[in-house]
Length: 505
Image (cartoon, rainbow, N blue to C red; front, side):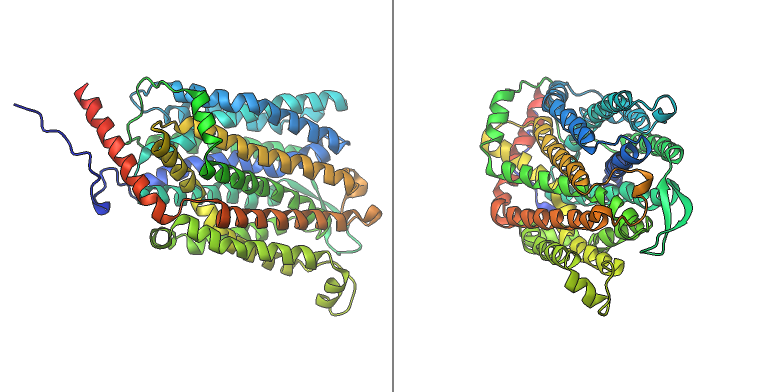
């Protein structure tokens, strides 16, 4: 009896064979929460640990260390991408196994970054060498997790609605993981000095090395639990090549001739760079407002718009398209960031909002600006990973080859490059601001105009970055809702044929 062949024609949208629901999306969400337990703590507080706890005086040396670590990523990221791409699928999939094999080394790497090395030695050279080793080890393990985890989304489903759901829930996971760190760390890792700052009238707090180490242990262990939880609750539905024969030279060449990928990579560089640069707000809250708990309120202001809009995101994307939403709403973030930079660094404006008296920029107005920026940036944040999956489909549509891990390797590197630029430039700017983490630098620092320079740093850079993101998404990214429809149809047909070929082989 002849075997009845499956049709390669795509099924109606409402009857997609790889349709997923909240349960599967929640499983993927857990993995990104695990990512952010590590990443947010490292990104936000490692620099503070190095400057204030390890007492590495020269910020330029820390900046060079982070730059060299990222130069290693030029080799590390493509190497990981190649390893992941060439690995044949196992019983539990091609990408899922990394969730259970890399989670423990990554958790340990996070803990080692905050270990109390200062108890062993105060030698600046030795401490800096330890920072090199632990930070590079962390970067390698994070890449080893992030490339397969990012690639996993493209094989959980090839349903456009499902991918929007995954991207949305991944953003929720980012909010959960980042939120835990942002809410708890300011309350747990600082110690009160009992001294009152003369200008702000706030009690001065300092970073506590022992508390930072304990918090690192908690985040490392928590990330391991969430990675394993994600492994247990996800499933790979889209078939992967059992013995991939990928021409990496051809693949990477095609990427760098692809306008969608170049635009997304540049946007990723800016987005990741800004997320990393937000960590310098820690110095602002500590040394301008003299209120470390403001980082909690800042997190609320950034994420509250996302919490409100997340329920409407799938419907809005379905109706208007990802490019259209991001391009038309990110201008709100750009305008708000520019106005904040102007107002926060204008003595006349500060005097006006303080009713004619000299003083500092009001914290409540700074938080309001963060809320408006968060609202305008929400659509970019919630759809960025779905946009990357669209680029993967576009590459398959135009070249006939599909390599999720190779594309994610380059995209991951672009995001790391953004983090590196943010960290190195920020540390050099700290040096320009004359901040050295010594006891003389606690509270509001009037000497060398340090605290005002910190405000300038933390507002002018975001103004440029958010403007750049808007320009890229509005005028650079070409994949409109209309252009994506034939791409989805062809890619789905290719996958259906590949499944038939696999069954007949």
